[in-house]
Image (cartoon, rainbow, N blue to C red; front, side):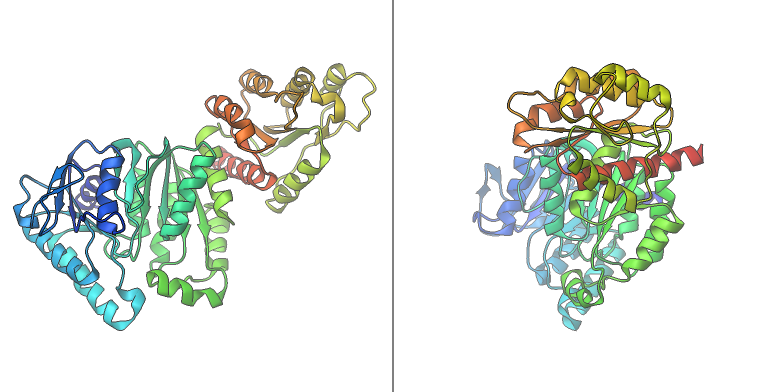
Length: 464
């Protein structure tokens, strides 16, 4: 990425001043919500609303035209219709504003007339050197800078995972799912029609962003598939990239085309090239995308691919291992010394077969015994990471303290899968995740986390 584009993208995510063109006094309008988003998110820079007939909005002075805004402007948030948006970008160019977020739709996704209008928008942006997000976008945010510019006012937990989404609706799903999972987000962008900035550009920016450790992508399709593949493959060597590719069936191409003006493309091509040839991790749902990103941002990476599982109920472990097996993940046999240590914890004649996965049955309901079994499993040289499965119960506490002690003692990654509601284990989640143990409440998400850690652990080992 050239220095000028890098600076423009840094300005987009870290502005010192923002103008909202098309801000209104009606809470039912996009312009009102974009202005509220900036203010509600806690932005500390200058904010200039623009509207031809209003004098104040949400406690701020309103300027009748863009030309009358005082002082320099880093980012223009444009909340007018598709035709006025083109005129606004021309004004931005003449005023030296080098970054803009254009939310209006009505461009190439609507047909030939919209395509011609978008070509004019793109031509103006390029002539003036404007980095333009959209059009047809929900916007972007950077929690590190308290800058939110979506028309859904939000405040989200801060973290070190950044997301790039080709859909506003899926983007919101990612945000809310991440919040439910206790996963903090650093940056998020809805790319829209990608008029001047491609997904590969956002990837290149996030690759050098010191506030982003993990990158998650929701992808419909792109005409710039080669650039995307090359960027993802290059970045994944040093920073995990996880992709959820939608639009797997040819019948869905029309839906994608009328959404962001891009055909979905071959799912098999993306999976074969990105995952099999270049080692970028691909997942199959929003839940798996968030689960994988959470594991990669919270946990350490395993030294190898040996998975251990401890449970006191067989069904959840079977469901987890079904998913893991499809990813080629194996469970090593336990060493004799490990079995002896498990007997020391459970009694010399436990009513189970001592193997991996290890079902402690009723003996393991007691957290202290469960913790000793976990320690024994982690001491096994064939096990590189461990999933601990435990069910919510009125009279037996979760073994969270034991899991933390075992993880710290062994230095190996530990994942918790609690069969529970989020509400019932919210305090456990905070305790575990703040100390590097990701917590999940479904077997599919726990398996996605295991897959992500083994995938990138193996790549790191190979690179080393």
